[in-house]
Length: 288
Image (cartoon, rainbow, N blue to C red; front, side, top):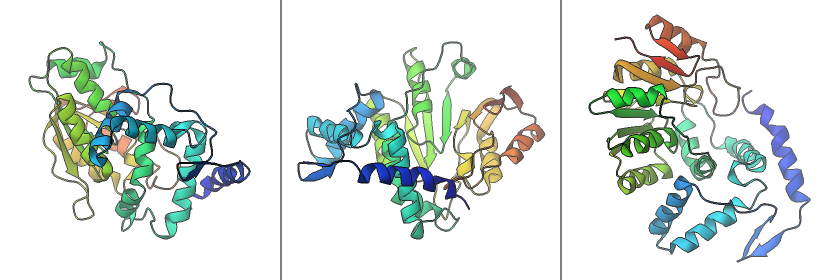
């Protein structure tokens, strides 16, 4: 059963926490085992700014809250203890929110704030000058990037900022289940001067209408989708001839929310469609 392998790390986390002394701080009890991040990356700093506006509090207070949250568990939001907390939460609340087709959207919304914090811990991608994706977008007259299952859109936003520094404008079309992240991502687009849209994936319209794009980013997404072939076909339809698909379609570990860990059908479908494999399982070029 998906998720069973997570019980051991979750139990280990509980054992560590129950055996750890607690400290009261501002009427909140937490385990002061971690340390705040040495410095905030761009996404984290802008999150604190956005959250301050959202809550009507000073940015300094927003940063303090973020630092308190980060250091509540050893290693911060990107560490093993927070990973264990996520696993434990998934297991505890699965009685209400399974990853079955009828419940998975509600599950993502319920766990949205926790996933938001985890995604904020991700490193900012660095795109090299000679990266084939960067080179391809430089050749497009009005470059447009589709980021399906965008998370916090670090990859696509990094591309847009890379070309923005060269005087080019890259438009981003973000697609995901609407959670708290949606408002932040649209705010980020305005804040950074990146034309940004967000299309909602919903139970009634799991694949929203997709406009044309020069690059489609779909990383760490297909294993989360029921019927991933339908999504791949939709992305294929949106990608312009000669466009690039940035993805990860290696088989994944079976776990909660990894509802399609075997992605061999996607690899076969791309071969059938005539895509050129530039980097195995990660970068493909559409014919044309």
